[in-house]
Image (spheres, rainbow, N blue to C red):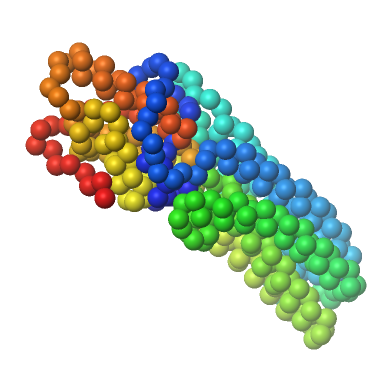
Length: 347
């Protein structure tokens, strides 16, 4: 599974249109817990805080890299500039994914979030990891001494504080969402359908770890007088960024090709569908993410009674309106079950 609807709403989704039926939403049966869609605005705040912090850090690290000549500091400067550029991609992702549905995109533009977040992850891999590893190798081949270690330590300390502030904002959001989704923080970071909060959390965590690696490399350089530990620190930062970027690329890829919800959520959705007026049982269900906190639902249901075809069509249309009226459902299609179709479990 993937997301905030984990063990959450039986009918998660978004206000974007997408049902085969039109008309205003009707009152629907109550649902279990759900992470509210309003948390997308907090994701924007999280990205903005990360952008501001990374921009200031990148400028400070670049100046320190020039003054000290430290390979680890160069890697950290590249890392921060890559993160700053990535936040721009994430802001674009958030804005474009919020566009309302139209005739060309009846399920909305939610998957744009994964496209632009993919660009950000690729940039982190190519620029952050690539430059850091390449520069570290060059320093191993052609080592150069560093100096002014006090400046390097001061910049690393300030960067750690700023990165910590950004990480704390991301951590608070993730922890709150993870609690609502009934999963651990680590599991939620990997499985949430919101790529922006996942990217900021992962990049900030990697940034804090990278600062510790850079500190160790610079300290070892100062103590031993050899630039080799500093160069190794640059390579280690690059490897760290490569691992993080590959994980982010893979998660965005999965959502782009179509990520289904967790089995527990499927059970909740099935149970909620059976509580809708006139629904006797559910025999088929497909729930797929079409954007951050937005799903598309297809189900086969058995209706009570034995109405005429025209009456059944109206009843299905009304049920679709009720489901699409939920705040997290981008679209819904209901069909009739065959008499001998087995029912899906609801517990």
